[in-house]
Image 1 (cartoon, rainbow, N blue to C red):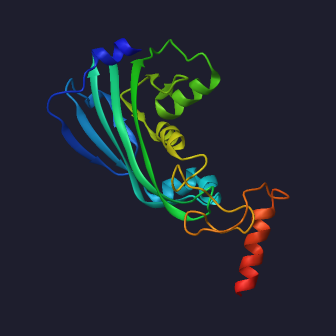
Image 2 (tube, rainbow, N blue to C red):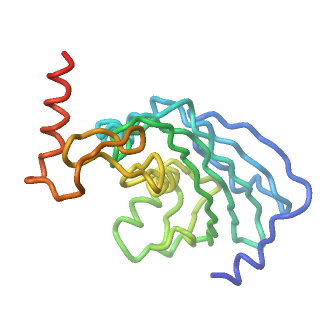
Length: 215
């Protein structure tokens, strides 16, 4: 795999092309030996359709993420290197404060041609090839393509999914909530002793009492 990336170097003049999120296609037969850059803007409708579970968990999209890809060919192989840039509004898993979470990741992918008589080993790969003109390997850094163009939407879903935090944290050192009184230790100090709460719901109960007391 590393040898393939060494064979396809991304250098020289870069041509810029803008692509809206109404199409996630990339024309293979139009690529050159020198790098060309394509920008894909992820619109909210596209996001909501594919990441409804993320929104339901409280992680919200801010603005429109952009995926930029530098693409070139070397022989019959297609090399893609790219970056994802975006912003999320999330709730910290420790202190419950909402904050802005950068959505960022980089990736690289080598696609080799798949002849008409060849098929992927697994059924999902066959279906992906029919839907998108491409299918991915297990490590998401290699795959195969067939035809003059590929549809990148499913690949983008994989890249974005890996970039979304499993447990959002406003800061790696966030001290979280006091298990006794429920205040945010990053904003205030308390005199509570550091002891384990009586139950896993002790913090929520303390927060409820605090809310009811202030109403």
